Length: 203
Image (cartoon, rainbow, N blue to C red):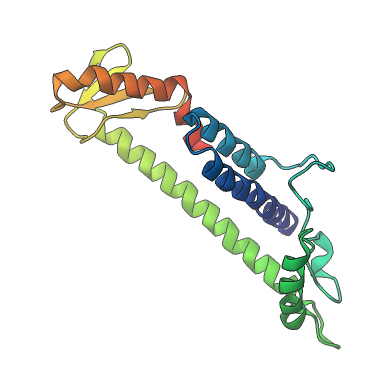
């Protein structure tokens, strides 16, 4: 499990390069169509969820594995981000606090990385539980919703319109919504569904 955790760490670090690039590009192309921004964030998201990377001389990623799996047993642990100023800043600190002393039975990282892995797993379980509870709460809130037309429902238990569901998404509208606004709101929510925003949000 610690190997998976280190892989996640590396994926997160390398994804941060893509996120930084997207943020800089948004400053340059701030008047570009919104779909371009969505596509750029899609690339950064892909880096976060994709377990492997394609390296080339044109790649924005200086090093795909800045934290080597062998760091837990190295006599002088260090990282290699591929960016010398960052390495020169972090490695002296890592060396000072995480280098094993002569006679130690274990490298400090052999203790800390499993602990951090457990914290990471608890975090995953907590977020998964929160997602399930939130889904069930919304499901219960709209279970008395009345069919309006097609996949559109109206409910007295909600205060704003939204799309709910993954495979067959439904649009929910508040009962007290002004009839004049419904056509505009439905166009907005249908645009979300056509762009599969409900799936992107889950990812």
